[in-house]
Length: 180
Image (cartoon, rainbow, N blue to C red; front, side, top):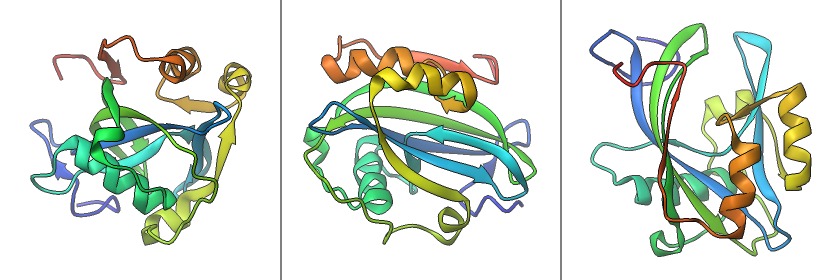
């Protein structure tokens, strides 16, 4: 159907769609881990985003978040260490010359892990990921002014999540209406 992969199936409107889990990772210094990537079909299209990816068939979002975190960073955590979900996001975006939709559950985790690994990356991730980097939260607002930072509002939400989640799962409709 598209270069996105077999886990993207057409939704009721014909758009490639998948469910995903994402992890907002903080280290012992209070920094957030972000991934910088680009679209291989549109190389100037670049953005910073959180760790995560598509759920496997029948996979619980919490288990998917743990799996994705390990595959993309080498960081091991248990499902019980995840906080949340702190955010549910329905997104519509352009990638690989396709308009795609993704429903995402976001979790938070704190880690003392220092080393990052790309051993679990897929071929596509190797093509489109430019770097992974720990960011001081004070720099996120400035980053969001010059580069796409996703999810929207991360610069505001991240300090709240780092310092202690308030127990409210927020909902975000990014690029499509709640009815879509």
